Amino acid sequence: MTQTNHFVAVEANIAAGKSTLLPKLAEALDWDPIQEPADDPEFARLLGEFTSNPKDSGSRIRFQSYITQRRAEIVESLPGHRNYLIERSLYSDLIFTQANFLSMDQPDTEFMLHYCEIQKRLKEYPRISAVVYLHTTPDKAHERLQYRARKAENGTPFEYIRDIHNYHEAILPQICASMNTPLITMDWNDFGCEHQVAEKIIEVVQKH
Image 1 (cartoon, rainbow, N blue to C red):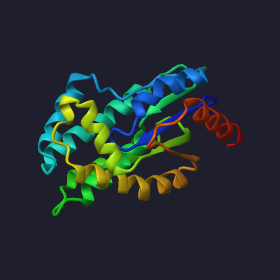
Image 2: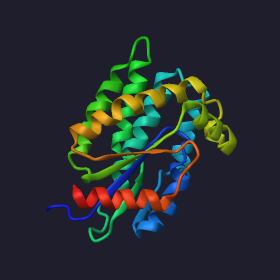
Image 3: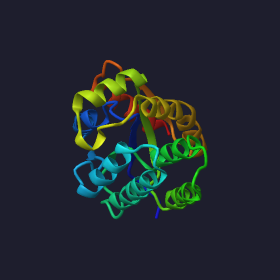
Image 4: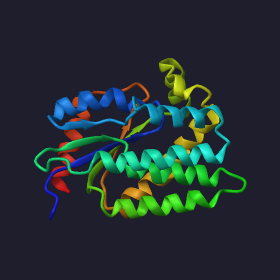
């Protein structure tokens, strides 16, 4: 069946401000927000394992595999008469998996298998009408990470935030181009107005 509703993904570095923007933007658009399952105990446990030892490839892939599965499950069987804002999408998983894989001296083959699994899941995933990328500098994202002080994120090094920023900058435009998804980039170092973001989304999805 042809998809008639919209899914717009809000993508950004860790602690860029996605979860703060999402409910405000959803209200401005009268769309339904779908936030990352940060309150899910298993999500928090696996994230904590990873951030406490970010060089451990096993904890990385366990967390990444779990969140990919949850992302795919969250959008299954949603009512087709509503539009949705997603805090990160499977596009994020492509970025994080490549970043993790390429940052290792001797990458585990599980990461490549997981990357292939994401590609398979994308075939069943809703079409993304647009991506909103909240551009922040690594310093600003790391500052916000420390300020919000989530227990599961303790120990996340600045170098990891910097690397994730660089991979978003390099890879997200390529993913969007390959998926024919419009990319809306917003300067989010000083946050911004949800109504301006909403206007840009409506403009883009009406044209696309």
